[in-house]
Length: 174
Image 1: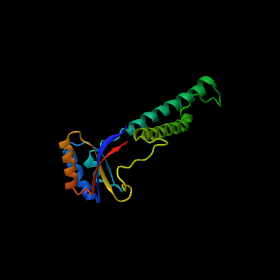
Image 2: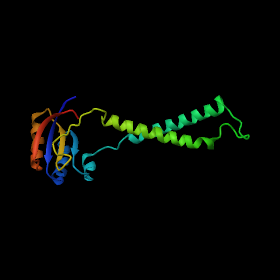
Image 3: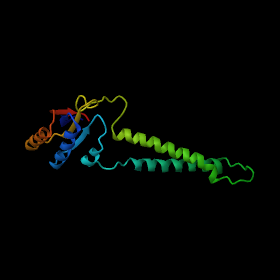
């Protein structure tokens, strides 16, 4: 789905870090910030919420654990009970390695799958950068293009005040 964004590019990180809080204070919808290297202050300035990915991992891990225990209990107690040296059929200690392995397997696969679904990464997707050079030496600030002309003009004004090198309105499928 093609959406319209205002993309401001900056030549250094300080200008970008100055623009982010101003954009948020104006009530503009901050979509994303692109930088060629990690900037620690950006997460706090953008007010990024904590991810819910650990909940997916926990749920999938518990599902893997339950699956492993149910499978082993069914195989060793109900389907094919063997009397080996008088030991009980449902020996919990014997179930630990498989239970651990399936817990880790389910949790890991579900985490990767949830990450790919959430970030809309899938085979065959073509990359679309907000501005040329964001992976090299350009910093970019992307906001949803306001429908109100006054808000749009104010956003462009803020970008210019903060030292934006280029300001463009682009239709992106991000």
